[in-house]
Image (cartoon, rainbow, N blue to C red):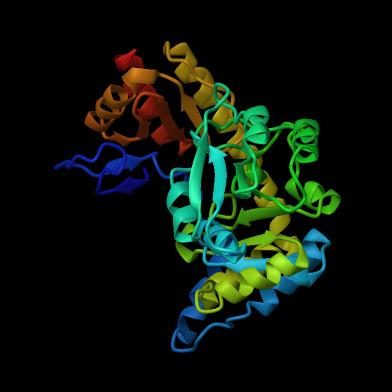
Length: 345
C-alpha cells in the first residue's frame, strides 16, 4: 500500500497504522526500470551542479514534440513553470482568469506571478468557456485552463477549445495545463500541442511527475511562442530541475521507454474505470474522468466522506461544499477505499 504519515485531506492527525494516500494524484507504479537505474547511478555525482539551461532535456523534447527548441521551456515541475510563465507576461498587474474549481494552487501561482487571480464559475464539472470568453477585458493578462481539469477530471474537446480561442484577443495568452494528458483515452479531447501550432497565443504545460512517475524529481516542461518561452526561461534562470530529474526526463523520452509508459497508462485507465464503476455501485455520484483520479460531486457531504475514509485508513482530497477527489491507486488501495465508500453510502 502507498502510505503517508500526515493528513492533507482533512487537516487532522492520526495515530496508529500508516494511511493509504489517495489524495495527491501520484502514480501508483514505480518509475520506469531504465529510469530507476539511471537515477541510482547518478547518485555518485550529487556533488556537481545541474545544467541550468537543461539543454539535453530541451533537445530531447524538441525532437519528441516536433517543435523548435526555442519554443521549449523546462522547469522544476509544471506548477513552478506555470508561475515563471505568468511572471514573464509583462507588465506586472492585470488579472489571470481560471475556472473556479480547478487546481487549488492556481490562485497562489497567479499572485506570485504578479497578477490577480479571477475565478470564473464552472458549468457543472467543466470549465465554463462561454463565461470565461465573455469575462476577458483589457485588464486580462492570461487565461489558465487545466485539461483534463483537476479536480473534476472533465476534459475539453478540440472543437470547443478552437471556438473558445477564436473569441480570445491575440494579445491574451491562453495557458493550457496538460499535467494529466497521458491518461486521456477519449480521442476528441483537445491536444494542446495542436492548439499551439494553430494559434500564436497558446502555451502548453506538461509534466514528468504524473504518468512518468517522477514526482519526487520535480521536472515539468512547456511549449510557448518564442518570445514568451525566452522570457519564461529568464525568469526561471535560478530555479531549474536538478541533474537527476534532467537525466530521468531524457531517459523517459527514449523510444525504449515508450512501450512501458503506454502499458502503464492503459493499466491505469482500466483501474480508473473499475474504481468509477465500484464507487457508483456503492451509491455515490461519480463523474467520468480523463485523468488519474475520479471526482465525487457529493456537495455538502464532502468533508464527512473524507473524515469517514480517514477513519478507515484512507486519505482523499475533500473540497468542502463541492466534492471529493480520489486518486486511482493500486488495486489493494482502491479496494480499501471502495469498502469505506460502501460503508459511507
